[in-house]
Length: 333
Image (tube, rainbow, N blue to C red; front, side, top):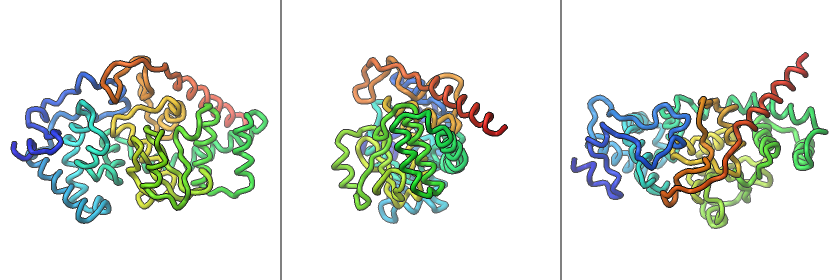
């Protein structure tokens, strides 16, 4: 047990805890919403707490010496897969660890390893699915708004006019589709996106993000639509930088996957758009529950029960999808 118990942050995983691992009473259904492998209780064949801790330490050493690109190597990929139960133990522990603590222990979760973890957690390849869905469904949403311009408010019409003068590529149409949805649901762009100068660095972005504590997509450029570089921040810190995110779809995939991997709630200010992304683009459609804040819940900061606004995003999403379907049926006949 020496290896597991030597963990500097007290997040070591004793054998009995690993095998009979049950959710903490402070955890709620919101944390495991949409997941099929949120709280694994058995170890991979032939593994013990000690061998998994050794693999974790090995990966940490490799990351520090060779960098995040080593996630592409066979050994790191295999170790990340074998230590999945160990990762979930820390992610689901209570009090909830900070993202900086998680990064210290599992640095490869802050690379493309996040999407691999999300695949094990939900059985969905989020980067591939979002990339394909934004290409096809993004165009459908774009057509829906473009073809009914007289119906929309001034802000939506302004965005459509702004895009008229440009020949948008499919990445820009995908970005515009998300922005159009936010306007339709009357949610502010800055509840998901932060526009920053193209020359901004991680440090400069973090200095300016004094109020954005929930997850954000940092867009580097002159406008949200025309940008070609992105970052993703959580808890006011940038964890994914431009060299890790090759297009808008990959930035959105990391942004969205972080809510599930790190047990984060959808921010109320963008909860309808996030549920639209979840149900329409990623196709996570549980029969019951929500990842939006409930009327009563446990504060992520204090652990105490707090009152929250009731979210009605599901009905709004359903209504929009019905209108989209009806529009496409009418225009195809």
